[in-house]
Length: 395
Ligand code: RFL
Ligand code: PHB
Image (tube, rainbow, N blue to C red; front, top):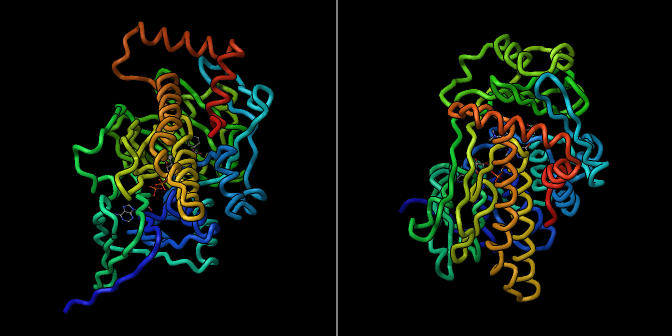
């Protein structure tokens, strides 16, 4: 007979990205047994360079799970952002407008801190799990199967949390007629470069230029993260460092272009831009969370933050279920999450439309975009609206 392992847990979590790891930690702190199953290695997960901006709610979630010490030491508090267009920069001061800030702390570091907490807790996490599959989540005895080192394992559980990102197996396991997809694919992507050079400015610069969008971000005072808009057909291999820096510089205002310090790239990749929502987010005993259920274009810096807010709702629902026999949180999970998600989808779509160069835009559309930028920087009400969305709407 082929070797077969069986395991039992309350919540099987598929995926060890920020959503899966944070959910695991929230449940562990509440004393709820859980097991995380990840198809990649820990090093591979840590090697993915992604988000950089944390909303207050995300910081609070990390505090609640006791993994915010390094974030408080090394994270950079940003009180605003700058918008650059027509050769000039305009600052949007979040702190003055709404009294709140964001924190610059890389997703890689959040993941590293959560992985360390997982290890310290002694709770199980399986890396390099192959052929992960979900079973009977529409009944009362769901399970997750995977293969590891030639052995097939079955995890019997009470709930499955599908935290396996956009290309994961969880959403794909839901039969077509039960789910509804809302999607917009943009005809461009972001080419991102990470470099050990000091950031060009103290705050992030979002630059709109007729040739395309550019973003100057950072990970620390010695490490920068820059992006330029490229057609979705572009390949990162076509971009030498020299070509990247020249393109970036050409899209910035003269002051930033002069101040830009360049250096060798330590990572270079292209991310496609997409808006995507799958409804509902619950199918019997399967709950989707994070990128498994929705994608936003990165312009609003919302993806990781939405993943964190989903799992906060899910953890609270599961805690109420186990500790108070109250099913309300789980019953309301999809509706509660989707209300917040659609607002973040709207904001991310709007920031994308405002700042990018659309290949099919006619002259009328370009004038409207210019007018919107001009209105935004001249109106305190419009700046406040951007600020409250960017720092994160209340949960
Ligand atoms: P992840 O991070 O994709 O993790 C999913 C995990 O599931 C694993 N997996 C499986 N495991 C088991 N079985 C399977 N069949 C599996 N299939 C997949 C994967 O290996 C992976 O480890 O999803 P999660 O946890 O929902 O987290 C979402 C965030 O990663 C994402 O939303 C953000 O990175 C988006 N994002 C940003 N978000 C922000 O809040 N602020 C930002 O500034 C920001 N900037 C960005 C971004 C995303 C970017 N890219 C590359 C898409 C900038 C970029 C360039
Ligand atoms: C990043 O630093 O990677 C970053 C920051 C802001 C965004 C998107 C990405 O809007």
